[in-house]
Length: 187
Image (cartoon, rainbow, N blue to C red):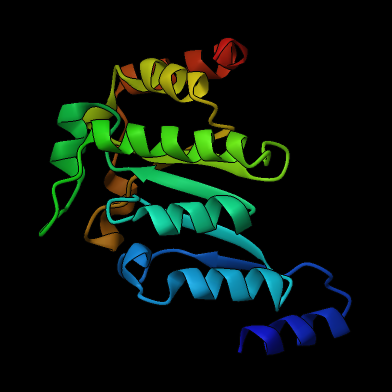
């Protein structure tokens, strides 16, 4: 299927097809994940975008992604120890904020080891949530110091999607994010 998608796209002038692996359960758990990534990269000529919390990433998958992906983005449910614990909905695994930071460090370290700093974008994302307030600057400074290239902050939606417009950011969060926008170059 991947090869056919790539062939079809190239026949229509699209030279690089992006294959984004995220959601629909935990993508780290799919048994054939590494084979799929390698096939999509080498046989179908696709650019791999991988998005996960990384809570179940094994070393084999990390190595495969660093060697083959175009972008790895690690999602942080919260950007402090307490916020991560409060917002991560883990059932059978205990993966902490500190574990997630160490994972990002391993990814950026392996990227340097493989000489892929100019080819592999490493990013992080979080939702703008009440318990993250006051931690954005420290989080971005930490991520910048370990070599992360991109940060994405998104407004959180409620479990009841229809009520998402009712969600408001506190004035403190708005001020903090506006200040970060002004000062982003120091990070």
